[in-house]
Length: 100
Image 1 (cartoon, helix red, strand yellow):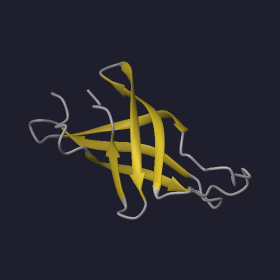
Image 2 (cartoon, rainbow, N blue to C red):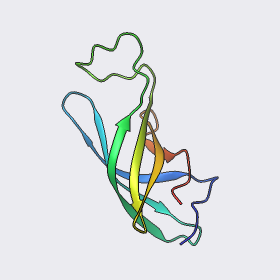
Image 3 (cartoon, rainbow, N blue to C red):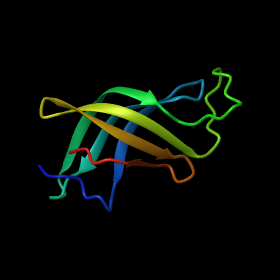
């Protein structure tokens, strides 16, 4: 399995939308350089979205349309850190760094 193609960093993500407005990424699927899909369980995540000064920690409302998550996945028995971006206008998930 090779690296993800850097020009096309869109990924499939299974996530949970909670009733308080938070998003929890759970699983992602990416195409490697051979076009094969690889699925990874997100072992942990941290929501690093900029909520601005109006954040009262009761309702998660981003001041822009981009949600940002630092995630840990397991790749061949080793933990790897990636950053996921969710664009709520386009309903698209992207990775910022390569998974591999």
